[in-house]
Length: 312
Image (cartoon, rainbow, N blue to C red; front, side, top):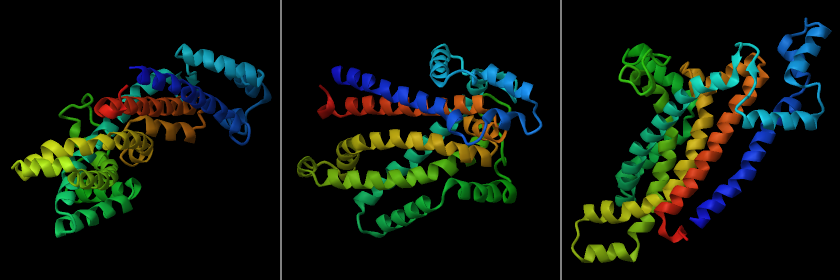
């Protein structure tokens, strides 16, 4: 319990760093952000009014204090393009990104664990070589290339699945799952390829341990040895990799959501950048960054829970 509390406290400086970097974003962008938001034809009075509205006419230290105050109160500003609060816009898009990310993660695990176990059990045989070849293909094809291929094949040519969108039903609904399949595959394939190699390596290490030889000497079946003894221990280091890859999926969702017109947070970021809506860009990046920090914290806590050697 003490180690978990220490880990939580160590996360606080990371949160401070994320919020500070997001605040500095608008000041590090080349040019005048207010001029870019209003365009070249804006008058001096309009520019002055918008700077005052965003508090950009105040000293930088004062702006920083005000930004922290607003963040702690849940106020991330207002979108100048969409005429809505940033918090409301993020709250309506964020669940779709989480849905897509979790679906891709589940798909990656469902593909990687059986494939990694099979590759380890049939080491250096044709099964292992075939799985390695497929994994190499998954690593070589990024989501922005695989996405259009999936659309052309399964949506346009075969007509099995919708091209884009999320459907009209609620999240995780039966009516909405056909829209979720292709973007989940586009994101989950590369994750499955990475995890397959990780599972294979971890399984090979466990299968060479003394307790595995003891289990075989006791007459246990190979299935029991592999799935009841070796696999649970092999999955312990995979927990950390899954947590890190969840953050990578969250960042990769920006590209995937754009390809499939998925109404998530990533697509909102692209629209905000295109519209030079800096308050919305700041809020969206802050949500993504804090989610990444939270996932890493939960991953570390989970790893300490599943690994008895890390408990104290």
